[in-house]
Length: 265
Image 1 (tube, one colour):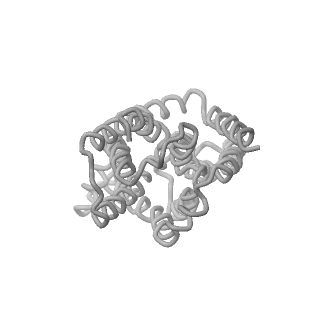
Image 2 (tube, helix red, strand yellow):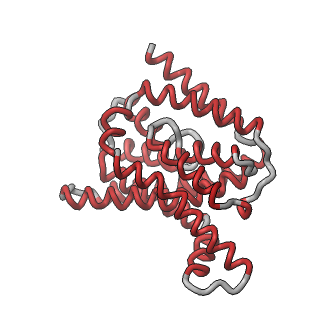
Image 3 (cartoon, helix red, strand yellow):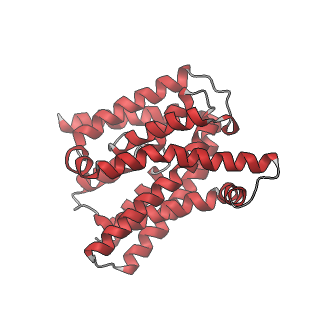
């Protein structure tokens, strides 16, 4: 990979990981339209670690509070809330881990396709738009319960299909359950941490098992750029969400999907 290719794809990964527009779809499309070869496993590991660090740093207070509440006997109502949130995140992560562990080869072989991306981009974009338009917006993050976590976790498992968008489908599910756009986004971003960590860990294992060579300069550049882009993306998205809502992202998905269909047919 050239430094330009690394920089472009790392920025794409960081900027789209937390937006409801599908980072995997944009990485695939970026490689297709620029004529670049697959970015490879080492780049995937570096960019996932970068976005993982971005989510950990941005929500460091939440994670420290949850860790503290889980490592001691809850003594306050706040401790109980933090421990409950940790349990909900673990519960909501299980479906995606199970599906990802059982069907990685199927996804890689049959679903990493521009036609699939075009349909999922449009279809799940429309679903996000409809749900956001009709669902109530009254619930907070603190109101999330076990049933909500299960439904959001099942929805997250669908994001293994390129174009669905992990953040997009989890925000859609949370909005369907009545969470406000801000609450839906915050839970989605917290939920991203264990999933990205699992993907990164699996990637590290595959690199180690295959004895793949690592260019540490390229690895560091990909990690740093995806981290910076991811951190900026989280902050900007949450701020923009309060002003304009989710509809601009729905429109973007429809335009992108239309462009893909035009290119295909």
